[in-house]
Length: 291
Image (cartoon, rainbow, N blue to C red; front, side):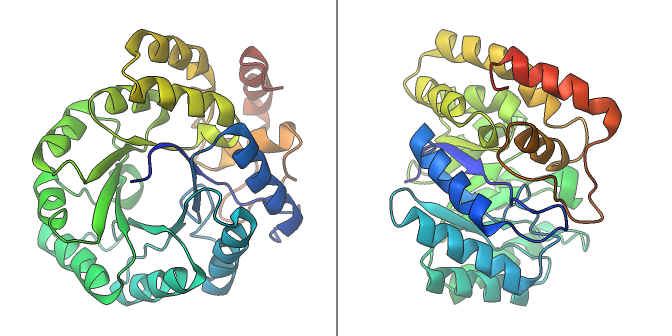
């Protein structure tokens, strides 16, 4: 089971929007050095929606090769077409990913039965371990705890990233599934609370810019050190908040640029961080000694 701080890695791009492969390799090395426990390649923060399938799979391949088995790599392979999700998942398995992350099908708003059959079809087609990803604020569809419970019975569906930030819901899911099924937070602000409630880790935006701190936060929560985890989270809250002043990954990519980790590149329809948010973001980074 993958546990701890799992970075939803932003894909570095040059000002032109081309993927910066050298910067990507350096980011992987930084995360391994700073203690990040696992990397998600091509999740929401990786701009999976703006890269074509060839680029998408190339980013996954480059990250897997750079990691070289040192930590697990989770490939984002979700799509709102079941056949496309199966294809991407098959390719990620061939490339050597340790698991895949499958966002609920967005825009077409399937029923709960449609969600179940979508994920079952992928699990039946590909043997790799699969992590469900529920983020209704972005997809306009909400996978209910009862559906998660049904899907958890499928052997190679092994976890969920629950990104609602609703701790009561997370507790409901944890109470419904077997101990071997992992529940991860997808909300940095409340991640430590979910872990203290029985979650196994956090798939994190903040870890892109504070990898050591997010690793420590998850370690404290996994060890049941509630007061220490809360104190560290309180310190990081200004950064958590700053990461969502505009749509993710706009703020985190600008923060990474400010920290010298990548260029300013981001792809339309996403745009660089608005000027009015740049100085407050710098202040948040300085407050946490990240700049």
